Image (cartoon, rainbow over all chains, first blue to last red; front, top):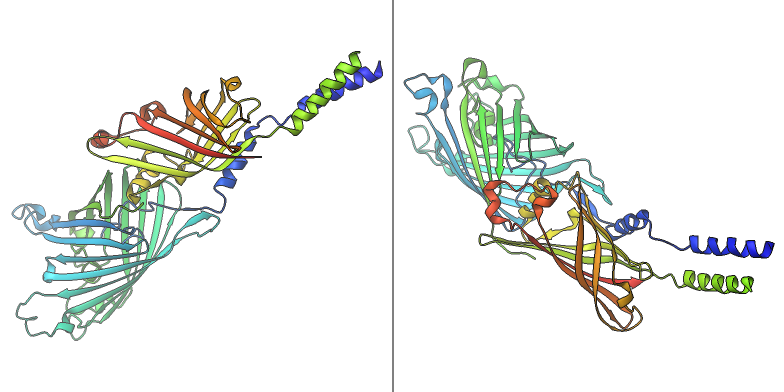
Length: 298
Length: 182
């Protein structure tokens, strides 16, 4: 009798030991399939510019970004100037990803007929998983050349017309909705604006993105210029504050901007901002970015 | 007599247990293809995990959305950020059973038509699916293949009207998984 019961018990145990598929099995397997992979943060910002200044984003290899940027005149320029419509500054540029960590770009702007070239190196990328990195870090450098010839500039030699920018870009995507970036910057002008003006202007830029919907974000950017900024005796310069909206539609990003600076390159918006928000010296403008893929990598 | 029968049953049970070999894959390949007159989009995932139990017919595959690779990096970014919302829904899983298991002999080389019924969970939505595919057995290696259509709208994947012409209403998904016996 006991043997009989024992056998039944044993039988039942055997069948219950059968390794039926459990939900944890597939999850563990999936982890192993993707083990050793790192999740790199993407889309910290929707475009390579926060507002005026650069963001941590770059063009991956083979991708071309065609950018048209426009700033209208100051809102406080009155009805006669149609509140800024009649005073515009435009910049055309193309940025290209040579490799996944090196982006180069070239551009031409109206202000002082400036040609500019840039390089952005992606050094660290924010990631989770096998490799953990809390921030993304890039090095940005650019060169701007004044090509305008008017009475003060026509006798200048080439190198007097050149200014350089060096920036370290540090950014973190905190979550889907919020990203923050800090950019310590140096603008160096080979020839300062006057004998009293400095050649080197140091500043720190801060930018933030608040994602409102999947395709729309609210961006803000502020550059704090270290004194002696108002030892620029030839003019008084203020810190640029910009606020705007990014709208992303498939391959385009439209950025609509309100700023107290009419400049679109670092030399202009960091060192040459002569208007203030409180006096209505606000410039409305936009950046249109369209990305093309030039190579079909597989 | 009863004891004899029970002993035999127990023996068979133990044999079953030791023979309980499941087929496992960590490098399954699933890809999708969206074709429209405006644009063709293809995404490949080579890190699909799958378990196939030849005794019960249970079939599971699971993958991470972020493991899909695209030719154009921008498409990959949009796929995860805007369409699949991969930070919220990192995985897609199919859990089901092969319903015609008796027609498949895992020990004999050949190509067998297999019918599977189960649930596909993607983007937070679970839908019942039934499909026909093949199970190939060759030199002891088992490969499962299937092709089926997925309608993005069924899984609450929002496609804005601006790009509606660039993404197919029905996306073709192909499964190709080679298993190792475990």
